Length: 259
Image (cartoon, rainbow, N blue to C red):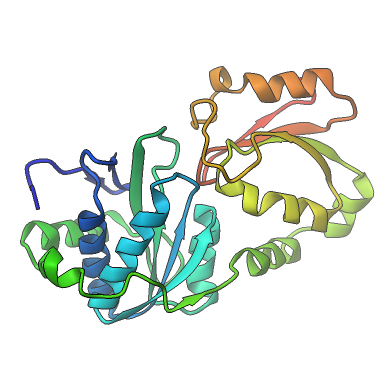
């Protein structure tokens, strides 16, 4: 592996460009090291909707299995859902394949602790130090391991149930709310429609598929939110709007008139 051409490796996780600083070899290696640090066991893997995510997930499955772990796929899922799933299913840790609010061709890797939180800075640094020290098998060896998950589980349904149990669902239902949503064709699209249905909230949206086609910059800043603002301005009866980034760990709110 070319150690002179590495992605950004920080407390926020790993981010780089596909066919630039990010590769399947790199992901398999980091997954191997993280699984070793977590003590093996079940490792949850979730991803956002970027086209490169599926191949990178398969690479992570290889690395997890090579380290004696059991990869569990939850498919496309928001970052908070993956964190929830790690604790909910009693996993040793988790992998989130996302570059968060960064646009294409970026992708990245976030590490989840067995408690359901993201790795702390010191924990990330320990993985990075093992990587730089070469404490992993060659990619020739890693490729001998299967790139399919041991299991696929639904993490969205239990996450929704946990959210509903934490709020006054009946008060929300009685308010008869209507909201506008921009999910940037990202991971939020797999959960928010089901959540809003449970809460009795009507919605209309823009860019609410799992296509991974980020039609505007995924960072939810005012200058990127013209489509949602236009929907609110021309619509009627909206209480406000919500916009996510690609892995739904960032949320911005808009007023009922698109402000």
